[in-house]
Length: 331
Image 1 (cartoon, helix red, strand yellow):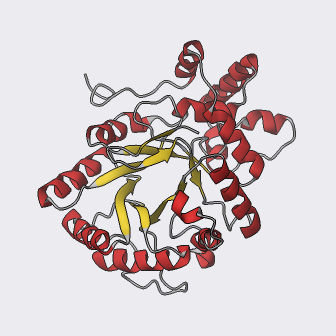
Image 2: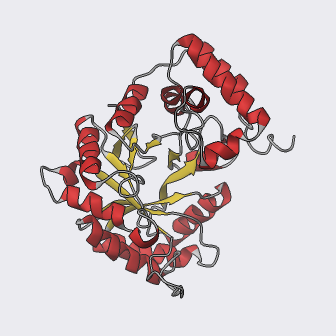
């Protein structure tokens, strides 16, 4: 496994990030533990989660599964760079949604961090990420809350997720003005061959401010994982984001061209999609969210796959990027 610095920090992380969103809803605790053990054995040291994973009445369940894995000992926590997120409502389930149990107020950040630490059975979080922008909370308040948590030793770094470029700039300019925080060190964004809009402003902003880029949904909900071939072979039909994508005739034709191209090269679509992200400027490592040990093994093969310039050029022809801003939409 290769390692790289997380943005401008001194923190070394693996080029693959283990996503845990399926732990609980899709993968039971025993299998989740086995996948985490296999990932650590393979050298993956960067694990990503969120306080809301588990969803609905089971929100928080994923963090609990990770916590029970840490509790097994064997230096699991010490070897792991742990990232979790705050934003979603974690208040009591029911008809009445109580205020101050979501978003990025200083109150909710304090409440959410303590709850995550308890579920994760750890006394610190390496990278604490804002899951979404909060249009109602000023960054001065957010950084004040972060500074307190850093001083208490509860978190080490702060990162963002799903931030537009201007919010990355605003967040880090506010941090610089305050002078007592290093600001955002990572951005977790939707980025893959089929969805390249992040190249316009998000990734350039992250690069200019020294943030590591952590793409989520590298297979675009399964679209880039050989979805048409699986349908033809009688496998699981596309659903969710993949089904919506394939409903567009032009987009479906692109995916067919993609699968046909990789068939000629004898390559697996999902592995190529991950390997492509590892060639992209500014990318720290994509988040892989295996439901099974076999899916983790496929991701590990992708990390060792070298794509030729000819193949990279062909991929750009099928999935042309938007180009940088402002040229992408102006002159």
